[in-house]
Length: 245
Image (cartoon, rainbow, N blue to C red; front, side, top):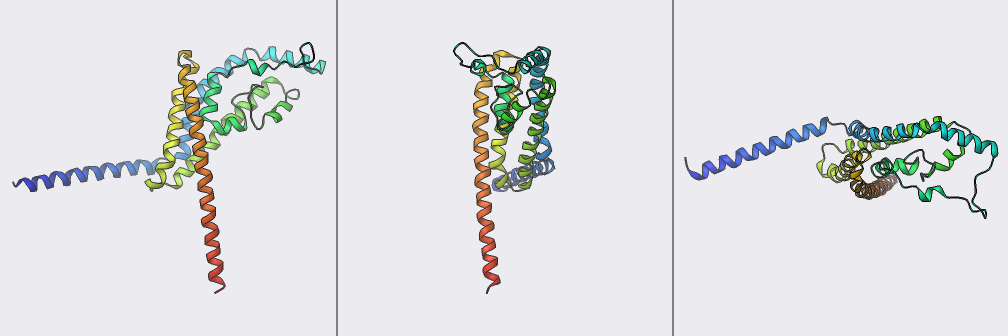
């Protein structure tokens, strides 16, 4: 057989194999529902560290309730001599689970907080603080935990739905899937630090990387929304002009 014919057959076979691999990959991507997969993955690696931290907190709930009952009865906060209030949060370092939620679940942490701690800085924190003497410590712990898990499901369902809308168009899906994959992979690497303190350096670095990637992803969503709005306005103007002709 001539050498050039043999080379052509090999190239053709390689091309068919590559096309088959691409076809299989596209079929797998089309079957995956990111709106279901992403919330499940994030709950899978966030739930164990979060549950471990909550179990440790529940050992002291009775003591915390007694302290709050005493403060409520006295209707005043303890102050240092000279009238300067003691800022406990300045001496509290976020736990590994707190850094995991802050990094991998940044929108939820910004809205609700990374935990039920009074030192959590979040949009809803002032509202949650108003419930301090109106709800028991146990109920507040359950409320904040539920809000955090509900926030994780909502945020990743929305991101997954956005990715599903771009299914079948790799040039549109790839730019969005990269930051999502980085955040998810970083969160998976950060999760074991709750159980293995020697991994805390990875937790610190991963939290920064995930939070910065979230910032990039949010900017991408904002720019995409602005571009979509501009196209919609132009389309509306074109339709208005065509109707007046």
